[in-house]
Length: 366
Image 1 (cartoon, rainbow, N blue to C red):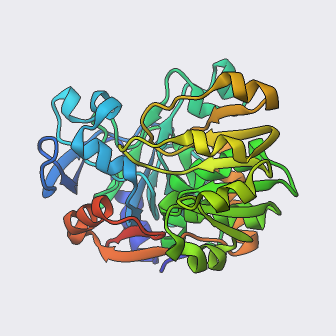
Image 2 (cartoon, rainbow, N blue to C red):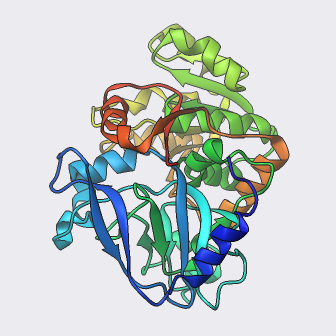
């Protein structure tokens, strides 16, 4: 794993490459919705004054990649297919900086850096000025709307502010999934909970396992909630203080009225009866949805008596990314990962769709 600078030869080669020219990259693309990915060559635009190019070393597989490739639901409008291009996913990428625009100073050629879901914003609107760039009306995503993502040998973005230096203490493979999935659970935990809160994590898949690690390290009292009692030991090994199998009503009854916050990390197209989880909240408690779920219903009359809140959260701004990476470096936190070479991407996508486990696939390139 490369944590520092590349060799002098590599640096010289990078400096000699004209940034003003487009680049041809080798990438894994879906030609149409639900199609198997094939390795093809595609051209990416010239690098502007604020742009950054990375040579891809590690790229996490995220549920959003599956939804984009399948053109599922609301994702369909944001695919490459919608603009007449193949879909090239990959947005949890760590690699070596190979080129930067003249206005970029925070990362340098030869250094290790990462890029997540978002790769652009206006930096002038109300939300950008508040540090909530993910809410910008001009938000851009790394592998949406025809952008060539990081299932490739190189990836370019035009807004280098969304390329982040990776702390020396962070392992590249374990950090890659944090750049989308990790940030997605980090943001609500730091924004909507406080030290000592009793926090429930619903769902123990890719998002849920990172949420347990973060919540425990942040000083929250963590209860893992899963439909499978077999996940109890795994949840406690991740840092959960307690485990509740929500398929057992008696266990839910014992937990009623005790949680300050529930983070829903489920990603499913199946209908879920969330009404059984609302009674677990204390007065003024909050249930927050970050997983991709079907529409929910809520008995607002009953919730009104305890003044409970239903919220959502969406990745985070640059400040959340930076604080998360610093926290992970300090605490030694990384995702639980399974490494596979990038040419096994189709097999990994199939397994991601069919299996629900607490590890994230990370694709590697030589």
